[in-house]
Amino acid sequence: MNFNELNLKKELNLAIANLGHTTPTPIQNLSIPVILQNRDIFGKSHTGTGKTAAFVLPILNMLDTNVFKNQTLIVCPTRDLSIQIYQEIKKYAMYLKNVRIALLVGGSSMSRQLSDLRSSNIVVGTPGRIVDHINRRTLKLGFLKTIVLDEADEMLKMGFKEKIDEIFSAAPDNTQTVLFSATISKPILKITADYQTNPVAINLNNELQTQEDKNIKQFYFDTKNNHKEKALIALYKELNPKLSIIFSNTKAYTNKLQDLLKQNGIDSVTITGDKRQRERELAMKQFKSGKVNVLIATDLVARGIHVDGIDYIFNFDIPREKEYYTHRIGRTARAGATGTAITLVRNKNDYFELKNIEKLQDQPINKLEIESNLLDFKEYKENRDTREPRGNREYRSNSEYRGNRDSRSNSEYRGNREPRSNSEYRGNRDSRDTRNNKDSREPRKFKDFKKFKNNNSRNYSKRYN
Image (cartoon, rainbow, N blue to C red; front, side, top):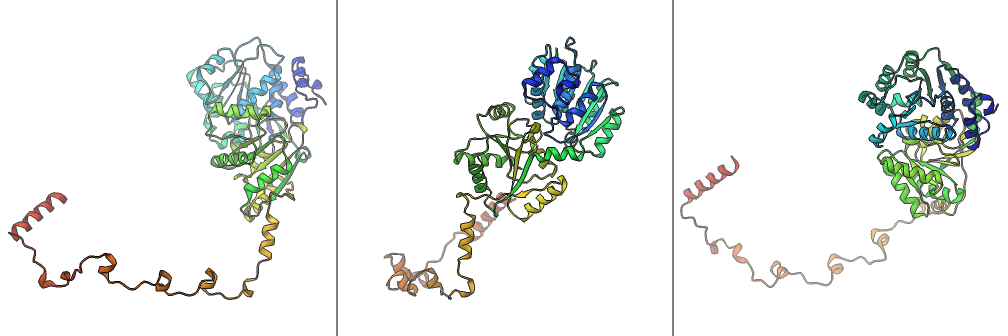
């Protein structure tokens, strides 16, 4: 089946062809007809399967462009994912007229948001900012037809359950609800029970998931304990990726990795949670345009990066949550393309964690063998093997171990100096024998000892009491 068979508008088919897409992905093929029938959807799908277009295309197809009222509300867990969806809508709506989108996220201009909301018919944003506008009465949902909860499991992890409830309480009762989640849990099922009416369950079967996973070659690279940085540089020099992402578990280490790559002649940009919105947008713009070929990021953007042409994913750290491994490697091999994911393993603990990920995804992660002049693992091993065994070494005294120095006494080591008395050592000063002669010392005199004692005790009481 191709896109022309999905009963979409001509303008949308032109945009799809212009973007180079011909055949819908499995999730698109299953979701688009159901959404066009105005039915609720409960979809389980991982990232990298074309899920965004699966709900954006039918929403644009059903949009009444002559009405400048909010007809669709798309709720996302992070501002990065919101921005990505906002940009995807603009791409697919390039030939449609009067499509007005309001982006409601933190870090962007409030005055621009208020201006966009006056004439918008599609709203994309995060739960907190959407609820803020609802409370301000600047976001009106009286004409709302569809609510999309994208990455619903991530929103619940981030504690947005109450915000989701507030959004649905402000929406009309007959609103179509489209929910996508990478995992299924009891809280997700509760949202489905509370806000959906006879939803159509769309779950990619094992064969389709396997087909998507086959496009990603997964490897691990043994970095021999403490050589992760050197191994990363060697991999870049040998593999020469065209467009790649390095994932780290901490914000601080993303900056260290950026400095490390710069020292080796590799330009990169970083995206972390503490970056300002303008800095993050500039970094993504440089990465998408190919001006910079390496992006270093944390798991904050593991679900929010939709960039075509990424051929390598490097996991500098194994993710703390196993599910994020799937989201990380899903940044490559998008829309039927192929890609490679390489995880750096430092010790046995990393190896065992990777084995647990293998069981979770039911996909093997093979060992990557690579030879590089930048890696001295073999030389390091040979040096250890050629060392003389400890039992065959001759015993050496401290003096022999420290060098061929003759045993010297303290006096010889410091020089042939004659011992000197205290008076001579401290200088040519007169001998102070009077200290030892009690009779020659003058006694200390006080005019009135009792008066002296009383004054001292009085001063003591003033100072400390």
